[in-house]
Length: 185
Image 1: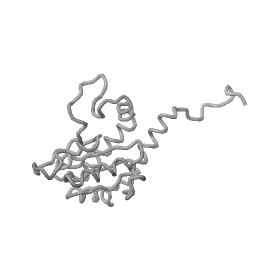
Image 2: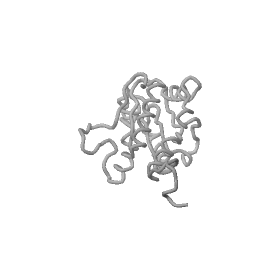
Image 3: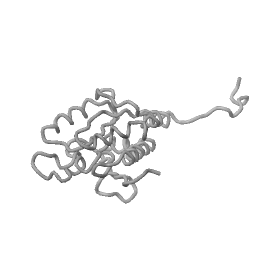
Image 4: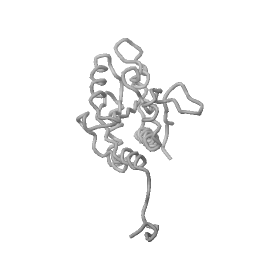
């Protein structure tokens, strides 16, 4: 059977697009809840919000099985090396969502015991603002990360050694992508 005899009833595509789709559809988060934001993260995985529709129904307890770290809550100076160790044990490619104002900037804990931004420890891909952010905000951050995975910008920028928050040929903010507060559309 020659190619001319085939009817146009099959799909073609690039392997790279298929790999991006598979990565986006099977992001497995690691549990790293540190404070009150962890309660909202657990609520996002419950029946009302149902992260299972995004392929994330199981929060992994082993960093070797996870490729997304959701840092939910304030990070103390004692916890920072543990956070880095868990991040280093995760498989590549790996992503980080900073959930809440305490994880993103230290929040109201402006003292020597709290890390003033988790981006000092690990590279952050998406910030979810709020104190604590609602499950809808976390889901919007996850959808923002899914879009970045689908387009392949994150891996391309990491390979080139550019910061993960800079976009080529566009106005570039000084901070990574921050999702808006509210219900995702």
